[in-house]
Image (cartoon, rainbow, N blue to C red; front, side):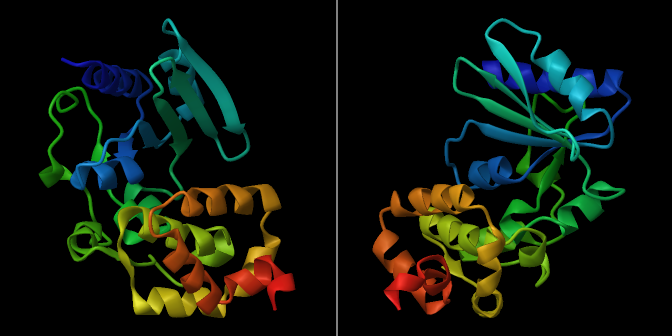
Length: 226
């Protein structure tokens, strides 16, 4: 068993001790499907994410951080560069949680339980938004039109993800972003800066900036260019 499998098995055991349903979710599963190497893992739990994260961090060279106490989001990092984020369900069930995420390719989940923590099969992934179909099509598609009101940074994140993965953006998603571009003004500049730097670090950044301009985001972020 390699390090990651050992950690996942440990997390599954801790979730069982907490009597909590635990799922590996989001970008890690997306990148696993695409054979991309990543060290960022996200977990969502039915209850007690803080307890689990603190217990998980009680290992040599692991550290625990509170990201957002009110929303119950906690992070554990280690010296190997891995980052484990733990949070509570956004909703009453895992299905409701996935329906409230941003893009279909990020709205997948895998049950984490002691009996399957050693062998992770992509065939067992929960995929109510058909994210795997969009991965095959190389398409970034919004879960719903309401996702940008919940977190307007997603207006930029859509372009950053598409550029990093060299995917196309679903036309309806692009249209909705253009209609909601003004919402980016409600995002803290440091968050905007971080997304822009990630996008500009991509190979096709120039084309992405042209798309940002076409969607009206450049004018919103840098009104001087008009």
